[in-house]
Image 1 (cartoon, helix red, strand yellow):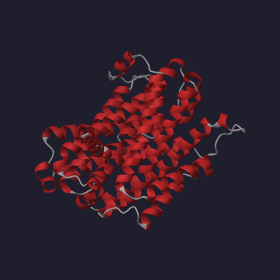
Image 2 (cartoon, rainbow, N blue to C red):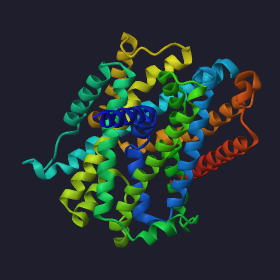
Image 3 (cartoon, rainbow, N blue to C red):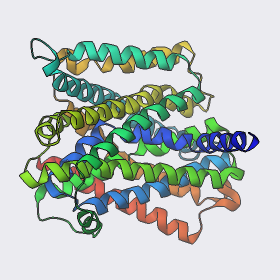
Image 4 (tube, rainbow, N blue to C red):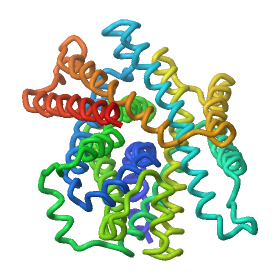
Length: 415
């Protein structure tokens, strides 16, 4: 009995220690990631899985770097930028991230509701499926009700649930249609296909994995957890779990498209295409599981998105975030109402997602660069400034993000 209780206690402590990582996974693997990974698998099979692996390795490095800044100083990222580079720098980052999150809220909700509508067409007498306005209303009410609790530990549990459902859905889909293992291994050898679209897809994969918001949020979560430099081992383990799961879920989506759509030359431009094309090949059951994953991914992204604005503002003001305050509740309600934009007024959710990702692609290198400067100042980090080896790692990551930004911008201009 004591051994059982001891094991149960250890498991609870372990999951509590990796909860911040689960939060990042929930935010990171959303409808944008699904579309990009599915499009890549459908067009290039597993040839670009090396780019995904590389971006997840760099993500691991940056999660640790931004977390360590808060462990040492007790400051969050945006407040650190404000204190060390002045208000203009901090305001630029704050406004850029808020704009991106507003666009993401519109795009993610629209994609999720359109996927639900497409999947539910056979279930309705008219064949029109569930109305996007109705499903948006339902999802918005659920998310606002979950937010109303206002406590970070509760947020962790909700995100863990969404991530669990999402992960199980995508992994099950992959094993139902799994491609040859040899294809996986070949895809880990760096090679860029001779296609104009390849560069854009590589930049898209990296953009959805290495978005700047992820690292700014990391510093906020570390502060919310109350971790200090003595928790550096826990922080590194949490970062490893986060980056590893991001890779596994992303590769599962890519593999599902590679095994079913690639052999037939079918391409994916949005999440609805994946639902339409996958059903005749994998069956209604497999598609239903995949749709469940898309919905869980959308909600797991939307939940962090709606609470980011109050968090980012508190970060800038260097105040403890109070999610039960009137200001926080009004801001979150406004962000949720943005989700009705496409269902009511129309528009292209994928275009909105691309706009959001393109904007973040420009901001990400700037944020990494500012953090790199702060991490090398003894007046800020004391004895915990970056070592030569870590400077090489973070510097390489910065160069990689700049290259991906250039590729993404060129690709978007080409489109």
